[in-house]
Image 1 (tube, rainbow, N blue to C red):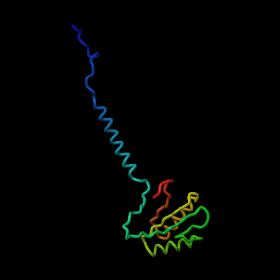
Image 2: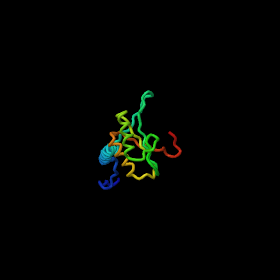
Image 3: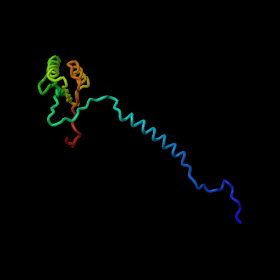
Length: 139
């Protein structure tokens, strides 16, 4: 006959899943909280909408080269007064005009901010920034 087994020598036949469920619920809550933080951008952006083929969106093009005067709709604007006049004229023609700023990578940040300030003082609030696609990727 076999000797009686004590409680210390018994084989554990069941698994306690309560700690596993607790950990999974905590991870789920952490995931839900962090995804709502990541989903909301820190800076609100006014992104352009896709338009129908009949709709034409008016754009006010501003090019800031590394050297030389800024170009407004392809023409040089030598002074801030000329730039402001052209921006105000574009705003008078269409109050929903969108400015598109294309700045060279070597342009100082203060020049871009100065152009933004001039656009805002002319009444243009919708501004987009042009960017080139990554190398090897065509639009």
